[in-house]
Image (cartoon, rainbow, N blue to C red):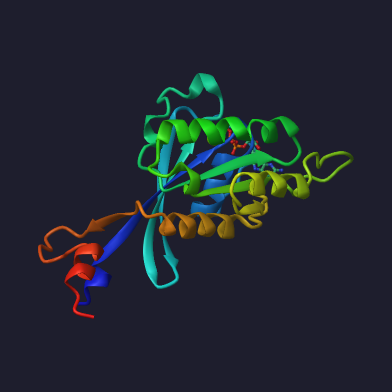
Length: 207
Ligand SMILES: Nc1nc2c(ncn2[C@@H]2O[C@H](COP(=O)(O)OP(=O)(O)OP(=O)(O)O)[C@@H](O)[C@H]2O)c(=O)[nH]1
Ligand SMILES: [Mg+2]
């Protein structure tokens, strides 16, 4: 068996944003293709995993769904460490959830303390675009894209967890940007002793 088929890449993705923006719903839609209109606040943080194919690579995404409500952030932000990508979520119908993005972004970098914060991969998601009605949409796409540009060209997606719109592409983008992040972690299948890291392979490669 070719060595590349035996190892998998684990990518840790943290989903952050104000309470009620739809973090859990996005994750449930992405992983289980399920949506519930009932709101049940997340307590602490939990993760689910999903296998995805990114180009020719099989990747295990470990997606951490976190509590937006401060009183339920019992774990603190200890689990931000080792993250490969951060997905920031806001509700396009509620300006306050957009205004707090700076806090989420900066607090994440402070706690995760990545080697190179300037290039750490983020993805911005504007959720609940299905809500239709007078004055429902409060944050324009332009404004969101400007914020992304000012923060080092963060990729932006408008989604509906309810309708499953754009959810897959947003998480796939998170996986792609995370893969490009140099701090990816390689998992080796147990019992295979001859595996070597890509770096080691490269350094001994004759070509
Ligand atoms: N119309 C609509 N409602 C949504 C959408 N996504 C989530 N909701 C609803 O918004 C409410 C909050 O969604 P959650 O996914 O629980 O929000 P959360 O960000 O996980 O909230 P916390 O766990 O408190 O941080 C629920 O009632 C969802 O059904 C969406 O895309 N469209
Ligand atoms: Mg939640």
